[in-house]
Image (tube, rainbow, N blue to C red; front, side, top):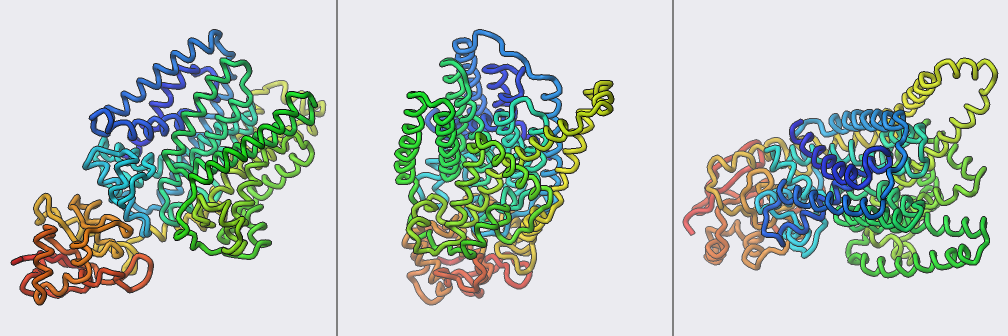
Length: 639
């Protein structure tokens, strides 16, 4: 709980200070941007901190917050000379209650799914994420140009790692606890509030829209739950959770009136989109695709409605600019062809069905979500001017169908889905993000229709006696019905998979309970500064994340030195080959952590690390710790 509260404070207070200074707290729309602004401040300050000579932590975060607050104050003085009218108190109350309810529901979902405060996801990518958090803590450097040291790449998006590192440093929590606490804050705070921010812009002044968007954010398996089983993709989860807020900021720019207001809104959008990029670049690409599709459709509808030279010119210029910028962005975002190996899951028709119902990976439809989406589709057909709202979903459906339902050789699949590695999982997670506004439209329209249909003399008389009470009761009832999505099969199956991924079973892919116990005991006998060699594919290199001891390979895809590679393949021959001891002396390796040859990918193959698995004691290898049948630590002696 202390770590979770620290993460929540970091994600609320900086952004709230900026909003209060730049916009005030009279309107709910700007307030709902606070977590997204905070995430951007974290990402930007982490990137700039090394340039100032400061250590990453609360101080540079406070400095960047002060700068952002000052800038917001100056912009407000220049661009907002008059005080805007305040939103109704009831709107503020509705937003606060819904945000709290979503936080409790999603927090409970993931608390149960994680199983315990210090569990870890038994998945491939978690090796680098845990070790990178440890690196950011120990070096006090969470810059995207530095944390790639754990995987030997020059740039890695650091927003999530910076947030987790500061959470651990301030709260004193261990790396696993800080990871789980930060992830809870991302899914239970940023994700629902980000959806509320989008609903506030799409349906201004509508409490029912806030209730619907907040409650429906609890009911999808494809996001955020999928990313805590597949991968795991923590940076992607943060980036995707910010996408609705980023879209909301773009819509705010589109609807702002007057140059001053547009400049203020554009600065807000730029700040939030920067945070999205620093969380994960493919979340930035998704934001661009969604926002571009919305703006192109919006410009076309305005041209059809007004038919002026200016609107027609804009209807032509916007898609041209979008395509040109998209071509440049896709060129920069192109990934390595070696990671395109994700094969499609199903036929094209099956993928289309699962995309339209937001049930990828075999997730079962939830009735309340299916009905909401159907009502949203009907509302768009009834009023075509709402087509822009559906365009992000159309983009998400297209990308998912290409990745999950067309052949690997399909050139369109390779081109359009490349920024996401053509991985159906990453594109499946975009579907809920784009579907929630459509479902919100459906429920909002239904509520308006019901109110009109029931406008009889008796109902009007009853309503007029206590309109606030009747409205509140209706909102509570609707929220209660929609909250059942949190218990629906769509999300329940995904959360069960998350729970399975966080178990310390004897056949765990990454760490068993015995292996974790061995790693946590390393500090009781290993000297500070000791160097550990191990096969990273067995999870043994988490000695760095859990015990703080340096390992030769902090990630599976690292770039070990020639001596480290030689030892990984030949250390078992240390008693017979003098070259092994010579390599040991050059590298300074002190300990070997041997968890056998079980592989995190599910195989039983050491893959280039046959020299550091299934070892036996000898003249130069002495067992210093053991637990269970396979977990052992050897001290290298006599070299």
